[in-house]
Structures are given as C-alpha cells and as structure tokens.
Amino acid sequence: MSLTDILSASDIAAALRDCQAPDSFSPKKFFQISGMSKKSSSQLKEIFRILDNDQSGFIEEDELKYFLQRFECGARVLTTSETKTFLAAADHDGDGKIGAEGITCLRYR
Image (cartoon, rainbow, N blue to C red; front, top):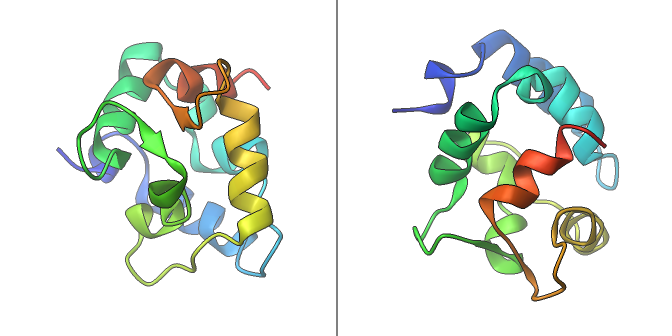
C-alpha cells in the first residue's frame, strides 16, 4: 500500500507546495491540505505505518526530518526547528518519538 492509496495525489502535491520554503511547515496545515485530517483513525494508522521508515512502531526525530520526502522523494527535509515543533505537537509522553496515536491526535489540532 502507498500513500496515494489513501490520499489524493493532487492533495499531497498541494500540501507539499504549501510548505516548500524552509520553516513554513505546519503539521496542522499539512494535515488539512493533504486530506489527512479527514481520514479515519484506521486510515491514519495505515499512513503512520507507511511513514515509519524503519517499522519500529514509532517515528523518531531522525525519521521525522524526512517526513515530507515520504510523500514525494524530491521534497525538502524539515528544518531542525520544524522537526522539534512537529515532535512536540505529537509526542504526548515526552519520550522523543511519535506513536500512531500521536499522528491520529494531530488531525484534531
């Protein structure tokens, strides 16, 4: 399964265009534009599994900086401040990594 099996390719492209400039990425806005905010919990968990590059069950900070590239390989890398902001928004227990529940909760923020 790929992200375009769940999300529209045109919505993904629009979300990536919106955050092309460094330090312009907003998890909330990206979720809205890409259509992730409208997906069910089970669909978001499937998206999470695709984004979890090493299949550890978590997205760690090192993986998170490549978040946009999981949607399109030519996309930019998140800046350090964007990565830390994203992590802070979704890491509810402060362990430095995001579980599937953290991604699911972001659609409401």
